[in-house]
Length: 166
Length: 279
Image (cartoon, helix red, strand yellow):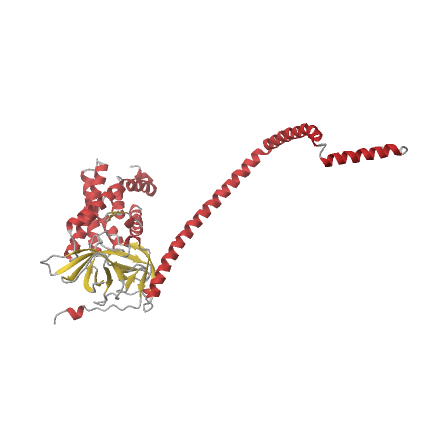
């Protein structure tokens, strides 16, 4: 049930990301709603963290993105892996884990994307990309992560009330 | 009332009296007298009416409040429905204005056949500049078809499914468009970037350019049709030791507010890649 709910959530997040959240921009960065849902879902105390959660997220975005699927799989699996590591190591500081996972997850996805663009000979200034895309995206993600974490907590309670109280 | 039948004088006197009073009343001489008599009566009548009305309101008040509340709820509901209708109509007006502008664009180029499409999504990666439209191969959309808006060039179809297509915008870092600058009439190569800026390269050093020059597609290369507006030059960079000049371009299309686009369905892109490979 929990896996099914997680996949449905990621699917909904991917749809919202494509239609709505790409319009919420700061400079050239935009909110990565799928990453935020992934991070919030994985860091809920009742849910088990697993880097494999990144794969369905990458697959769902792969349908809409012009980036090769494997770039998204690696990026989101990397972000999920960071969540898994952080949850195991600094599990007591939930806010710290949440913000760290958001920042490092954003960075992981953007670094993989930039590496692909660099290798595929797209003209790119890395510093410009960092200043105008990655940092604004990170800032937007940090702003949105807390409300999304709260919403995910409520969803968790609806999906499995007994585990949601854990 | 009993009329005095036996005394005709009394009858005549009464008639004369009545006629006199009538004449005095018609002439207005009795008004002060009547007013002074009627004023207390009016006062008493008003006092009685007010009290009666107060009692009636007191008795009927609960029913009226319930009725008023119901009316209020109905009016609120009607108001909400009308507001919704206004918003829907405003959206329709905006859409009609957009379609009208697109129709003007299409009429100005009758040699092309167009398929209108709505933008239904954007690429989730902020590094790439693609939009998703709600027309696909079932509607005659094919890979490579150019896409325009009423202001000018948008991009070209990069990938097609049955009911949707992905359009590569000219601002995408992978996009390259052969352009011609007016009025200098020189050619260049326009390319996008990850932050959505447009720049023209390969402009001959001897060309005279200035900010405000218009940039059109040249049609060279066979990927885009010619003479479609792209934007205007915002600045020119010329270095003495460089082989070519470069220029930055302000696009005519506002890509952040793209809603409806036209796909040129009768344009056949030419793939010149085989001609460029050395034997």
